[in-house]
Length: 114
Length: 115
Image (cartoon, rainbow over all chains, first blue to last red; front, side, top):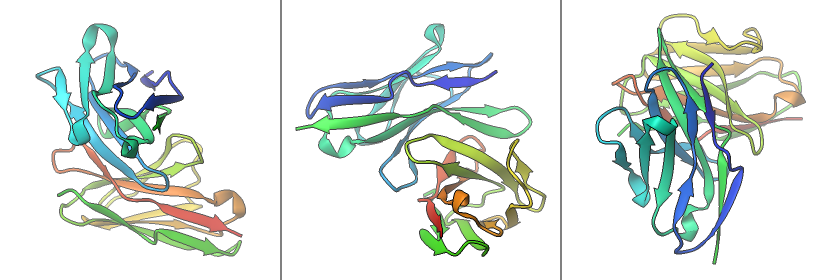
């Protein structure tokens, strides 16, 4: 069965430090891959997505993610974290098999300390 | 572009009443919309997939008579929580599938509190 794993429930980084959020998926083919961010009490905002082509994708707010087929991973990175980046981050897999469906990971809560 | 709105943003109601939540795609037409429920500190749980002009497809364990979904136009889907009870209190989020049918765009969510 398809699944998305975000192994870190929460991560704390210092402001200005680099960030990497991990995501692994289980699917027979290359799926559509997404990262979303959710601030408290808000909906989800799309950070970036990968469908095909260059495996390093750039997103909004200075985020990037790299698709590694051999590891079934799609980790999110940011070179320098800002306090405003504190939020919940969701990795997701989009499947188009007779109807579109998205499977979300459990989420990683990012805390940023001054 | 690709903005999705929800109304209301929050609602408090008495047990036994029905509540309607609207989801609109503001600048694009969405043949497919999704309704999710999110419990505190948890991920999104897909409730149903709504297709314009046809009946919604509900996920296993979701009562279709409890959560009525109507997708009457290419820009509007509604979720009605019928005879709401305190256990229906939650954060409800809708999303719309973009024109390329590959990316979901999410609304800001509706917080429902049933007293």
